[in-house]
Image (tube, helix red, strand yellow):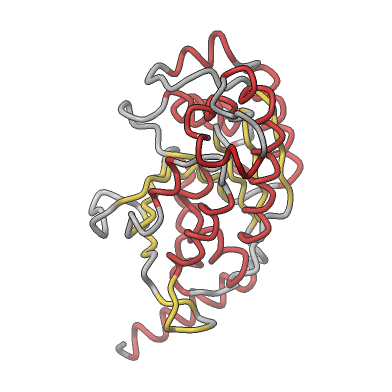
Length: 270
């Protein structure tokens, strides 16, 4: 690092120190979606002192199809649709809270909307399955009360689950209802198997060493989080599968807020 770069770095750190702790809201369609950003959230809470809350829109009962392995653990025929849809909402809330303890999540908000099935159509959730007025109201109320600097959701690609696309749309609607000066950055996340994406606004490397023990890396924490969602057998295959957590800014007018979050994640400053 040159002397000029060092001085610039010190100035940036001083400005961030004056800004106070970060507050970040996670908004995801399903229990277990937070595993996509697990390394980032762990760094935020455990290393940067950030406050992180978590909104889960659906009960995740559509995941009964992937619950065969967990039937003996939970003592129920979870892959039977009626049984799975009845039992999984409670099971998956408990799994989410357990994962949240690992990640350092402060509060969970479960909006208990219906998880029908996998679909690429976001309108199925927005127009038929979900109480979108309730979701928008809850999101706006949280944003107004807590003054988050960033909201993390899943990147709404056309090829991804329609519920993820719907969740991102609802987040953007809620943020747009706020005064311009108070709008948080909305960051769409996706996992990547092959390192950095040049189109991304920020990338966190899961193989970066943990400050507590440089022989360990963030992928261990990600695997812990995945393992808490034992009712979802297919998810377990994501252990050690992806190298990076990639973020795209979804509301360009909030780029200054996004840059503050990215700088803290990069410098490690509180």
